[in-house]
Length: 236
Image: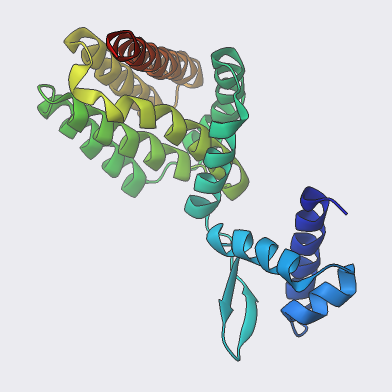
């Protein structure tokens, strides 16, 4: 059995055991069940532990943890990072997922959520001079909106795609042009106003603009980083 198949089988088996409410298999029991060495089982369990899927403790054994959207998003984001998807694939996926998220978020908008979104946009408009601060607050605004959809499955995928994109922007926030930051803030303001008015057409149009800005900005940052690395190689 190859490593990927073993990982998938052990993962699925542990999840099934947790759902059934029975006693979780030990490392030795898993090795016997799947006819592999304890060393290979231990490697799988190490990965599952780092991913936040299980917890291991002496004497208490294995525990399958409840899925938390933030942890799942980080895990998916890390997988996407090493998968090498191109910008067009990323853009298409984000458009499809975030439009579904937006529709639910508008339907389920509460005064408390609307207040938090308004506060975030107000903060954005006050910190225009700091690129890094703009990206940090912009991300907080976008995550607040995504969590407002009330669907954890959509939330996990939307957050993973957004967070990985904004990671590139956040790393070089201070070098972002002022007109880019201004466009990003304006996009968030348009999106918020459309959501408050319950106008899905306006909200979708504003969301498209914001996503395109995020993807374009991240791509520019990546190109600048590659150019800088190439320049250093030539000097060396």
